[in-house]
Length: 106
Length: 115
Image (tube, rainbow over all chains, first blue to last red; front, side, top):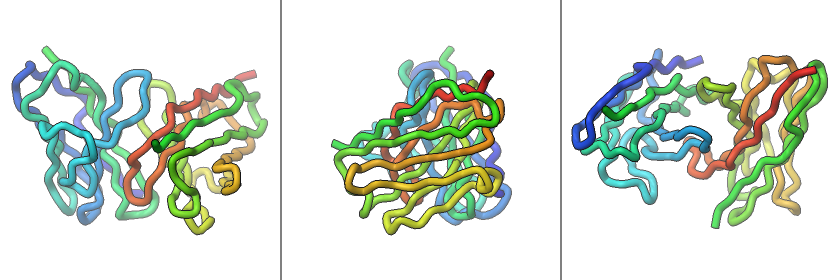
């Protein structure tokens, strides 16, 4: 299975820019997607196919990358962005998710 | 609007069978695929399996021998059955819509495997 590696946690101040990385153990073309999950809630789609903003998601969120290295950027970060962010690949079977990056605000 | 809602027992005994239902609205199962994803407490997400718009299914290979996903299109429902449950199967089970990515999710149902 394709392993997706994410850094476990990040802490930033409101108004700053933050980049969350996801590295795949093998190429996934552009089939990398990003989700936000707040405690007690279901995941919410943010970015699909590496760089496409999902409906209703603020333009502060953006995605980039292809192949094995991908990045979710939030600029500027707001207090409401405190959450865990997961990447997911769907190029190789089976679908796999990263372990998540917990974003905390200082 | 698009909605998905999971239902099922909150507690299942070890070695027993789990049966969950995902009831959808706002879209057709014959035009959309539904997946099951689970999340153990405090941990990450694991893809469980899917039923595609044409009715075919795919399963996580680690769970395939214990898992069955089916649907009733007339009732807009998708079913998950998993047998021989163990404590490691304790998780929140979500149903979600999508092909390559998942745009709508249910709120999830917590399933605890315990005697």
